Image (tube, rainbow, N blue to C red; front, top):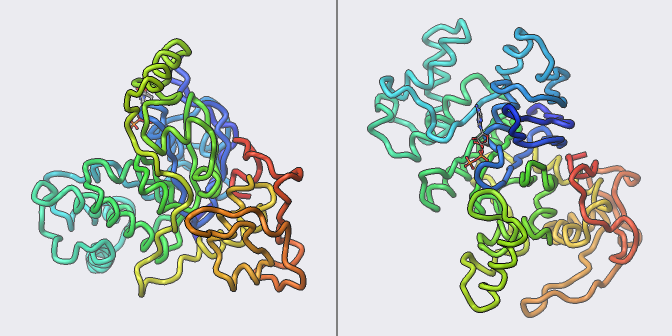
Length: 390
Ligand SMILES: Nc1ncnc2c1ncn2[C@@H]1O[C@H](COP(=O)(O)OP(=O)(O)OP(=O)(O)O)[C@@H](O)[C@H]1O
């Protein structure tokens, strides 16, 4: 199983420029998480801080019991071997063919024989759909193939954590979906923990188990995908819809005067761009038929059911609706709204079904579902324990 990453109070600045502060979250082992955020909010800096390429000013980043913020160089070297990183352009060596590019980490960091290297390289090339492309140079293949080759190279040392920086950059929407499918298939095959940094809303809505967002030098939220996708936070809604109308501006954020001037313009009928219909929680992409079950997704289901009562009401309902009738029965929950004629009905029930049979979880670990008006039905705060992945 992939490693858990526990981040507590992490802050990073360059000189006087604070990039983000007090970031606290947990990447649950073997699950796929994604981090959204407007350009320049420090998502790439966050990834680089996680692998110790940049040193945070304070806070902790615990991986297999080692805090990479304070550990020795030797420990950092060892921890880095747990990571596979897919950079935006694949970061391939232009003068080497794909075979040598993918073999590079094995030749650098292990004493494996060339026979063993060959077996591993061909296996990873096949896993990423690059059979027969081993002799090509990076300059001779498409952007999508370069990214897949970058992923093949990231996989050769059997990483427990895979970091992906903007996988959609330079790709059309269809190729972006194909690479997303590949991430889920690889996740199913090796059960590594994934963190994907992206601006891509389709990917964010359909791929990860968990979603977070950085804005105004803070982690706005992080938790099960349903929490962010049903959030009423203006910055989250604006980002998902890609509109000009909202707190995010041309550079990073707007002041109140600009906000008011733009509001007046949009109220007078100027198109604020973007689309209206990016709302709700679409079904999550699944591994390709024939690929093993994603164990991260199986564990995630139990994990989320344990923290369910601490999540906002809309997120709870979306989670319950995403369960099959058998799973709802096993966890002892029932949707409170029914999809009828395209809109939602009023709540129908306020708790677990009587005489329910629980699923994988023991009875005392399944969260009961609070009534919409009852305490416990609060908005997820950035540092809510439930937000970090329990
Ligand atoms: N090594 C560095 N030294 C100084 N400033 C840096 C360094 N690396 C990044 N920055 C600054 O940190 C800020 C965040 O950069 P980063 O690339 O992480 O943003 P991002 O959210 O990934 O943006 P994008 O979505 O556009 O890629 C930027 O203002 C950038 O100029």
